Image (cartoon, rainbow, N blue to C red; front, side):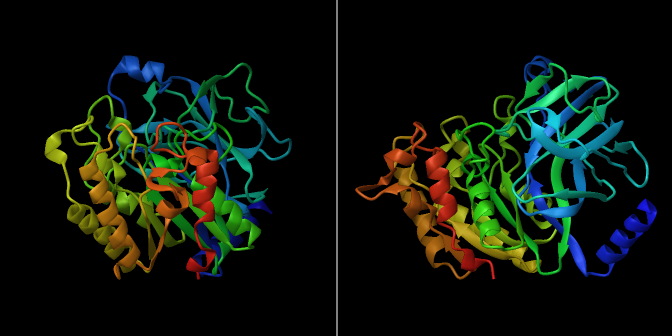
Length: 403
């Protein structure tokens, strides 16, 4: 019976009645190189299980996961992997545990820099619910495919605990490792919205374990409107359009958006729409943690965003620009940087290179002082919103853009 179900899944997926869409996803950054830093960040493993907690957008009943060994110089062995509904903490919901296989086998070796997909499993998953994906690493390995700022607690336990109902006194980690997407079979009309950006997209300074990033609030609105659109958050803290973060102190900033675009946007399952909110770090970082030689003009940023739009349009993806939110008072604010922000925002609002825009700037600004973020939306650093600010951003996105 199980073999028949899988055969039907493959036949259905292959002939287009259904297709894969992303219900959750994240973007990896390069690995730390200092062993001491790896140890402190809990990114060194040997005969251990990572139970990673993620929050779905679209519902589904047939799932697969995407595992990445991005930026690693060595292959990694996944000894076993399971997926389940998360009950609370590290505990899973009784009866929901499913063992994952890869080309029919319970373990898989992922080559350096490669990605693998699990075989489909049958599991009824509601929209906006928590999943626990457990990955057993039997050999000494460094975490790869890392998203450092998850704003979500995951768990580490000794041995192969992938099938455990709960983990006994687990270590905690705030990163997602190896796991980069959960995908579900959905009707042909369904699709995926990808949000590419920096820390304001991944939800920096939002409350931990609450899923209060602006893409989460967008997902909630789409579900309430009965729209079959999954949402993937491709934000990386500190990310820039045109330059990498490459030193040991900022390697978590990831590769520049143009370099990671194919993997983090084009390769996502079922992607139909893209929201770009990127550029404030290109403006602010040079001279404040990045070399002054990496200073960019507004025209440089406009050209970079236009390149992303052109590459997405080649794949039939609609592209919406997000205006940059106010940052006066932030540690890297300058009057010259403000002029660049305003020039980029003006282009986003008027450009024919885009299919539309989301006015995050207007949603977040103080009407009495538009260069400042509204006080009740400010997390305290005058750059990142708080939970209320992210909610306002998510509510600023017109749902009629997705048609």
